Image 1: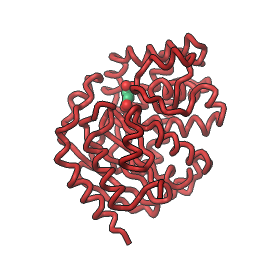
Image 2 (image 1 turned 180 degrees about the vertical axis):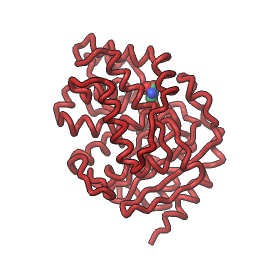
Image 3 (image 1 turned 90 degrees about the vertical axis):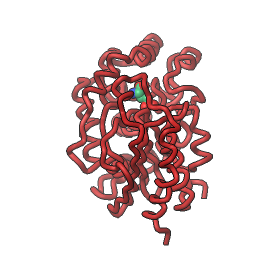
Image 4 (image 1 turned 135 degrees about the horizontal axis):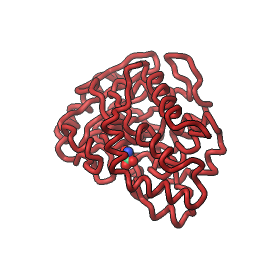
Length: 308
Ligand code: GLU
């Protein structure tokens, strides 16, 4: 049997020297202050086993990793009608690109680019108060992490709100095309808070388990999304999880993943488990540089790939 703890330790050791190669996101001032030398990994298995390496218990800003969870929540709430507001094609462009939105009449390419995540959050709101929806997202993350201590970092949320002209532009653009059902400030207010959720690798890997197990949280027994929806969320992560770096990640890692500009990546190995890595230095597309190296080595050593 593969010694997964050893594979994780090896992947950690291989990637550790690359921490300095990436660049910490600085367009959100609260993220620019993060120490780039921190590096953690966690592997969650469906029987509840957790293997960890490095700074696996330090909370970090999950940023766009949150988009996967709001996608699951929105699909659960409004079902396939979500796909009238957002597509499911890779974008091949930057996470916050406005260009495609204009040519595609305000319907974002997929739920994992910023515009698509904002449209998804808009549909998740579904006529409710923004605070109630932010609370729902946080409660979902706490339940998935199996840890009531998960919090929204309000400094990061405020920092994003202060510097969020680009995300507001995306929202106004969609609004102009009639693809937003709630006021821009309500929608981005929830979006900034979901991005500012702080979690450790240990919590995030545990939180991703339901996507590895056909939508069922193996530790609570809850069926959170239908099996076919979990498969489709994984398909979207595989094709769109790293913006215009998604092909490279699929090529190198061979597993669905979602990056965040806080330096976290959640990676799903269907039927096997979930892996979370965190290293704040990013490549040009906004994916953790050392994190992607670690995942490539782990997946190779463990023999995990959706292309088996
Ligand atoms: N909150 C970030 C933004 O909206 C998320 C981007 C990311 O993590 O890739 O710019």
